[in-house]
Image (cartoon, rainbow, N blue to C red; front, side, top):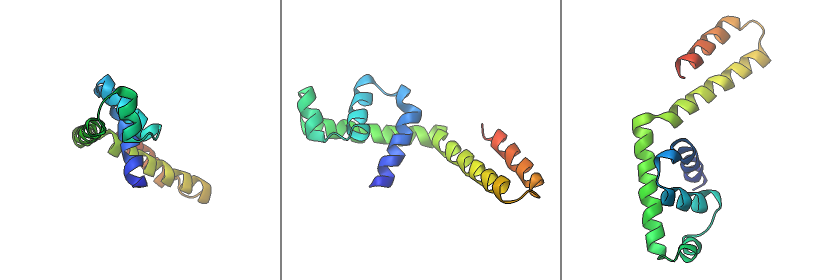
Length: 110
């Protein structure tokens, strides 16, 4: 569950500007502020089911955006490259060629 929450939070960060105001509010309250569906429903005067449906549809939209635009996937690849660079720099002074290759790979993923 934590892995799903983390993924949705990242997708939300990348694609929130593509959502409606209501979708942004519900997602923020549910995932970032950790409110329950019932608490959100009570605050906005709607049913728990309405909030649930909105959150699930929005999650599907975020996954669809990621499938098409791949912003999160590219971010993850860049972070992996950066981690490798840090390991090389900290662990081996002889690795300058590999560091250059990784730097070029990082630039290509922007």
